[in-house]
Image (tube, rainbow, N blue to C red):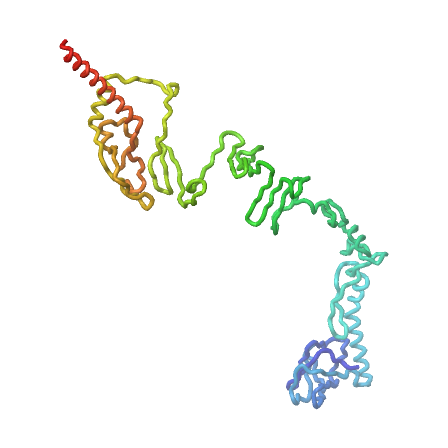
Length: 420
């Protein structure tokens, strides 16, 4: 018998093994045995000491030294009674060491492993109780990690994965669950998606969701509705009331549109679109803004129905006299508006009234608070502006007083002509 498990390295009088187990009883390695190293030429040495599972002392010393070399130990090189006794003793020792492990291997029902020594090597193997047991049909039971069946249909049935439409079943190709996204969460839909009524098709009402677009198809009134605060009915919606005409509607009350930046328009229906945006504001009067620049006030025709007014006091001749005296102090002037920013250039020469002068004479004809040192040169917030209705009434009262004077003078002239 030859022991040749693993390889050895030989240096001096020391043999160092790799993958060896020189001390295992079953190896039957003893002092005095011959070790052959398969070098060229072959080296023969005698074992003089067994130091560990991977170390032997031998004689003579290595000549030359080698590493990772095949070898062989003649474990039955001696036929003496003493050698036979030692061999039998080693085998008995190995039996004693392994008999307990083999008994555990054969008798235990627990899910465990046992370690035994085979040819000097320690090996861990599963005990019988750890081995998976097949049933009478030759299949491993579900409780042991198998399917309990010998075909796919039986396996699906035993695992509760039969075809069906309920939760936990395997979807068949005609599974109705493929026709809905109910219960799905998250994910990405690649490509366009068309939404139609249950009975609709691609020629009827539908919505198409594509990359960066939402298309609505309807024979009339396609719309996008909003339900603020989870309202039962829409609170507002954009709707195409007719071809090319968009409307903002409120589910209840009055629809309002707030444009944070302003409204951008074009010159007429077919002109070029401008980059400027405009806004209106109301602060005692209607103000017009272009971008960030206040252009001025917007004058409209005031409603004047008596039923809209109260505390009406008609002016008499004494009021007309006061108006006449004020008008006679008005100071018409020519002037040019200064440029304001890049949007409003300097104006041509104009004829009019300076509101700062007029407010001192006829304050009823001027609105606003007047500009002060905080004026930025562009936006004339709180600037004085003329109330043309009040100015017209002042002129009317002055004309009425003047007409009275003319009539009185004409009467006096007539009396002088008649000699009375």
